[in-house]
Image 1 (cartoon, rainbow over the protein chains, first blue to last red):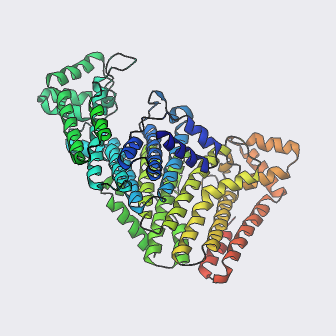
Image 2 (cartoon, one colour):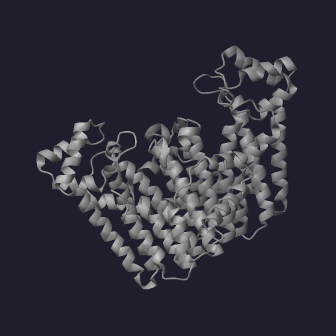
Image 3 (tube, rainbow over the protein chains, first blue to last red):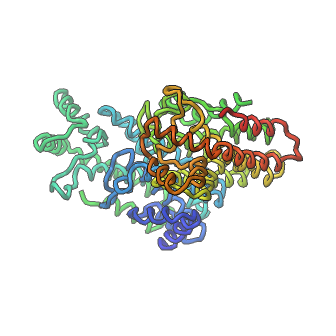
Length: 298
Length: 298
């Protein structure tokens, strides 16, 4: 059914009657389409569900195009990003085109669906702003972190789940909760992987989030555990290009204070809440999405 | 009634519960609000009309925020642009927030209105891409120029007029035509002013469009009138920083071949078509918008 979703996206782009856009789109590496899968699993493989999935994937791609400009990212899923190949301007314009086309197509779906999805895009855009604002200085505030990742990552997944449940005539509230908790868990895992996964080039964790000013959950948990002197040391490493010794100090301290384990237990709480909210549906696929995610390697 | 429109925009921004956005918004110089005026004159001063006008103005502001990043513009309406003050990233993010909020609010208006407005935003975004693409080399093709300015400038004015007529229970087709022709005339006048209006700093026309790679209508008309050798000379000036002598050659040739007069007669044709399409309504305000526009100084 994901092929069907891809076909609808291609039809959307074809409507625009501009070859340049089609060619640019081909250069975007297609992702795992988590949101589309989720929508189809919740709503079932109907026409409307595929249509919604195509719109949401277009929104997701548009947001990544702008994100990569904002974060100065050269790569996306192992390929060169659009801004890296064609420049920031093209990435901004292509993002605007995909966003507006997605919003236009939303008008063919029920008003309730259109509202929930477009509202989540506003949250997503505010989340991006919060992310940038938080990166100005070391952020020890967990609530600010959770609010930011909720808006930046979870809100579109939450809205997708709500909208899919609406289309599939299921309990919108319960699926929204499932999506929200899934989204939060998903983002925290991403933030953990930046610390635990060896980078291909170095064979060691890159700790690139911290270098870019992102005080993700593990750093906040570590900060809370450290003594005053160590706290100062950690904060002094914020947004700096660290040498091996400094990186190893962070990793050593994270180990000493069980930071990754503590972070993972928070992921598991969100995962449990997600599973609990849709328990009655006994939907193996949706449960598997959660358990597979938590089982990613660290 | 424009105060009412401003109040609605402020309410929209207040909904976002983020002081940073409110403060950033204050730094944007408010324009003439042509689109809002047009909507209120067509639909009448109703609640729905003010609501639509606020949405369209937010879309217009969002598009200008992104335009200024794409065009590397440091100023907007005589004030520093948002990208110049706060950087490109903030301008992109603020644009995304305003766009998505506008699309969300569109859901409260009739589906027909929401469709026509969101479709015009796609055209507008494609128009921006076409503008950038056309600026790669000298463009002697009038059709490409008209297609680009239709999408980039006229489509949102056309859609605003259509939507306002829909809300005001008037003939949507006629008002759409009025808006389209008004938008085309408006853009051509802007392009003429770049050639005829003395810049404040130099006391001479800046001819900045041509320097930025924009082959606007007067340059296309001039190109058509020139002999082969002169054509080559004009093309060789494309996208260059010109000295006084080179600028004066362009202005002299434009005078010789009545280029500004010819361009203005095309503006007048569009203005006449606009007036003709809404003649039966005998709406002085809408007629005045057109005649005032054509009477701007050259």
